Image (tube, rainbow, N blue to C red; front, side, top):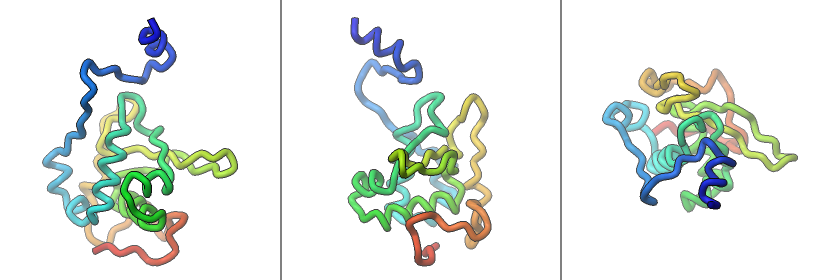
Length: 150
């Protein structure tokens, strides 16, 4: 009975028959120049974000640098650099800024996943070395030094 009530409370939640979940890394993604240029920590962060994408949830993926650092086993500064790498290369987009007074993290969307019925934009495929798909001279909050693109 409670299982039925849980489904009614959260319609976006997908209930699997078995408890396994996996992330599919397509050949198009893995062979892209943008993905090959990522550091291992940024690749792990991308996979953690991909685990959070369920149907109709892309664009509402909230993750703070603190949460990312605990998942990856790194410092908050490193997690910030990994977020910036993903933003610059076009893997993720910022949908909503953080509201630190309400203790809410930024919300992201993945460019390789379907969002609200629209096809993915795959912006990372157009990235080349030295390009910034995040925008001109924008800096990601929490990262003060220059970004290593190597």
